[in-house]
Image (cartoon, rainbow, N blue to C red):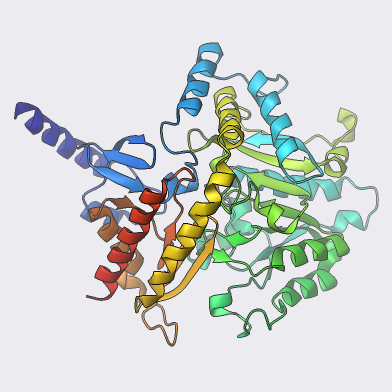
Length: 460
Ligand SMILES: *Cc1c(COP(=O)(O)O)cnc(C)c1O
């Protein structure tokens, strides 16, 4: 009894301190302070446990990072073993063992042509690095015409991170509009969004007409364009918008035709999320630059990598007085513990044939998702592998969204939480991104709970 009381007291104390001291990301704190916070203490497999010991299915892989579940033994062991050697040494002018081995592995498993690995700590910096390398690449060409290539093309609704360069290539007004005076100019090409086609066409009879916008931009402005950036196959934060087949491939080919570098942002879609190790593999894309982060350490430590081709790397090669050095680097670049655990993460992919094991679960998920169309307020259900977006609408016939103040997505996830599932929406899109290691039974529970949560909130 005494233990229970002290536990309750500690819970109340932490809740109060959380509200007093923390400023949560992507969170309106006024809303947050009205709620009882969910304070996580530990995790195991597909589950999170709060400070009272309540168990929740981790339906979004702790924001899209946990791949093999929490407390995966091989990953924990790799971390501990590396800590016993050294926690950190700088990569500025020195090297370290795990950073070297991981770079070799990443080059081996990513699309052909990518031969160099530049480390940083998160998805935004991986994108910043790609943008700066692309910009500097053209500045270091001998031809004057090439040096005029200074701007970027991005897709509508794009999300590439929260630092200012990444925001400049972003296209989500809700997040990005306020910073506009601080951003560099970009061209925004039409992005496919088949449920709400910006051209009011139907796939596949549209023949990917949405690609025309990118083609027009490149045709008219290629002389001033350094690079185009996109997420291959799925725009994640935009609302899990799955691209029609051929769009990514078409975009890549246009970039090649017009002499514009192609940057693939696989921060969200990489490391098995879409059913292949990298989303580029679906359409055999070979990017000039590739940004990786989120899943790279299996959800344990912050790490990111930007990969580049020989052609890009060569443009930076020279005597120091030529001024071609890439003057960019983060303090914890190539952190040995993070690299060691990333290697362990990739070893598990091989050893446990994670992608093979995933295929039947993707099918099961697909089958279970069909049922959602029986809910009156489900407008669209999108899936690519283990990335799912369920778009809720106020009126299904007109596809009219809910008013923002109804916070319908937020209400669904709180309802799911009461039922033992942790998820996080993107506006009114309910996102499912379970760990790749989730068992078929857990997957069924996850989907059933989310179904019930949506029904209880939208049909009562
Ligand atoms: C999350 C994300 C980023 C930013 O990564 P952070 O680690 O949050 O900085 C960039 N691009 C895409 C596609 C993402 O999903």
